[in-house]
Image (cartoon, rainbow, N blue to C red):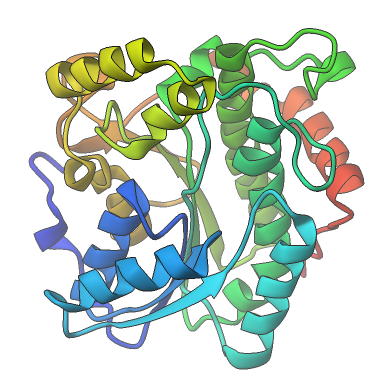
Amino acid sequence: MSGWTADEMPPMEGKTVVVTGANSGLGYEGTKAFADAGATVVMACRSEERGEAAATDIRRTVRDGHLEVRVCDLADLDSVEAFAEGLRAETDGIDVLCNNAGVMAIPRQETADGFEMQLGVNHLGHFALTGRLLPLLRASEGESRVVTQSSQAHTSGEMDFSDLQSERNYGKWSAYGRSKLSNLLFAYELQRRLDDHDESVVSVACHPGYADTELQFRGPREMGSSVRMGLMKVANALLGQSAERGALPMLYAATSGEVMGGEYVGPGGLMGMRGYPEFQSSNAASRDEADAERLWTVSEELTGVEYEFE
């Protein structure tokens, strides 16, 4: 896949793609690329207003695909359920689900359902969404894909099931690392379960490297720290690659014929921070099948969503 770019994506006319967090950053760039390839893209956004503004902007340069904005707040399981029910009522099938949206290194907050925000949005919200959309993924003609966006920060994550919500001990970066490790445990466990049932759906994980997006600024903004905001701007300028380049691993994972399921795709440059997409290895903790099974069980209990495999 040396030097792979979005220009090498296959035609996607007749395909339906769901992208969470589609109104900004990686989700915006991914949406634009999918639409440019001819896909119908369902933009799952927390804010309908911001989603429509992003769709209007994309339509100025992309005319082949179709964009549809729908509200999906991953911090509210009722919103996730309503989004999924709306799609099931109006859509015959989904070809790609990109679990892309996320929050990073914010002061401790809780979702509408009482989950620690980073775990709740980055993992539990996507766990519930994927489970509720599995029938539509299964209904797609041919192979469909679930692409889960993780991060190299997964290497700092630890699965402490006795304090999964970080109620006793919260660190904004350790909580972020746990949420990103959870993304990988989920993606790999989903593939194992799909394989066990000979499903036509495949699960693959990816990460963007260090991409210059708004994700980095929410934490400093909510802390009211102008110093941290300034430092982050400098770091992004020096180390980050563009959001357009950062979206390439997700696009490759979603469309490449080389993907079989269970892979991890990220930038192949210095320390995995930038460059063109390639298959990579995640850490040993992300491949811990016992932790993956336990997280799956806990996630079903917390979200009330049980996956039904054929």
